[in-house]
Image 1 (cartoon, rainbow, N blue to C red):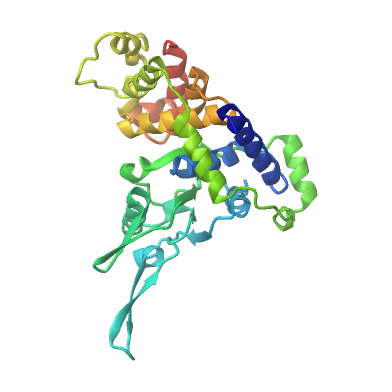
Image 2 (cartoon, rainbow, N blue to C red; image 1 turned 60 degrees about the horizontal axis):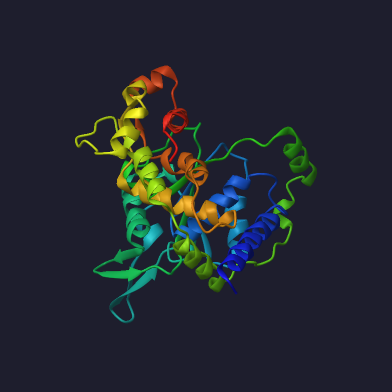
Length: 337
């Protein structure tokens, strides 16, 4: 099979996954695409939306379609690190300690309402997210591959919640905002009377197909000018540049006129954001059956990659400016390659 045929085949597979998920979930295509993107890039996904928008159902449905092992952790204020990663259990008969592995030892972890647990629990999860391993006692255990954390949080209910540390937010490849359905979509949802979860779905994604998708992403080419475009976008989110860029990068960043919105940003995106933006742009190209990245792929991936990596100032809160507002303006001002 030629490369062009492989890309066409993968495009059809992605469309099949979307269609299979649509048997249960009305709309929310960006959620399914985000989950597929995170799986291909071996990254993690943060879903933010009010209750009742099928975030949990979307994750469960994708786990069934992919055939991956799935476990759900309900985060609460009294949750302990051992409840996530596992602990040592003393066995009185043998007089020895045995390891009881926690629910994080799986392929897909649904961290439901992740912002409801304190820093100790977040730290336990951070090791798993960053290094794909868990330390119990004095021994470190590798997690199964692929390993994917799909976390949800409620943006409107802040009582009894804990803000996620910036270091942990930066570990999420994408942050997807789950919006209300349109009136036509909501009409379909109401007609099902909450029975969508009972609709069976088929397993469509095998481990071999996943590996093939990951290998194809590695083969997707990205021109040097588009790489400069990605670096320029990420660099322009930083309010203070200690080093001056030379040549095209300096011209490109200057053209954005950062002073127009730099007062709204306390800290910009890290280099990890540039890597994530390149990976997700390649996946966008894969979804469209292309073997090369276009500027449109970068622009499509930028909001989900950057929105959780910008630390906004008090001026932004006072003026009602969001991360998405800043990203939209940055992309409109940044010259295309």
